[in-house]
Length: 366
Image (cartoon, rainbow, N blue to C red; front, side):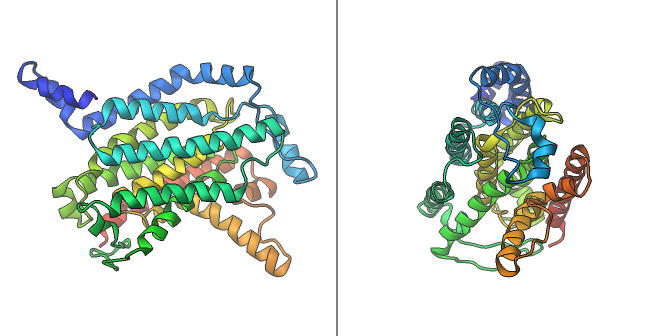
């Protein structure tokens, strides 16, 4: 919306700044941060009044973890509505509204946020850690992936690159035409990213802190993909619509920092599946839009480690009857071997920042 003010630059000096993505990205980050701070306490009070408290897994399920986290029982959840609201409001204010990628990212955020909201609501009302069934979640995520794939495959401007597969460290696509496998590939990216962030959201501030570094990295990647000169220099795929995603990613950075204000240890509010499913899914969609899907495995290294730890734990127990970790996801393993919660959180934040830097470094190692 604010983008169109640049048209006044002929009459009023200085309004040309609204034309530039970089200016609007910074403004979006600041706006989302301020919105999160301003409305944070209101949202928390509202959730408390509605008795939207986080259910903690019972002692029969995980006795030692219940002792560590027992004090969090009743902490308001569904705080992801604050993140979603700040990103959507800031994005609509500062991004170009004629950009299809902007709407695709916002739609994905709201769509999966709604799915997570229903999941959290069922958990709260049932007073259990079980919400929407895994099959229903997967079906909803696959439907989103199909919608995203159709947006790309039905557009003459987008379908050629959408079918290409790029790998980090390679200048040219390793596969130039994935055909209908493109839909499956998009599904793997979106479902994997959404669930990986969801699995990471187990300690105060852990998931949102890692989200900030990943979103910041993809703000740079989106900007590079949407700028022809930079894309040509770095030899990355050029998508003319990707540049505006810089604004959306920056809004997520600002909203994430604002939410972290209330979610840092000891947390006053949890994002719940409302936030984690939505954030992960939107990041996956952004990665697709700037054609850096597989680089997400590097940039979002902490999310990948968390998800892989769960997969390995399940496979090991099913095949051998033994567990690799004391408990999965892996952040709980470190808690149960003696690390303080704050120690786990900060060290994982450090790892997330390092992974993001490594991901950006690959742009010059091609």
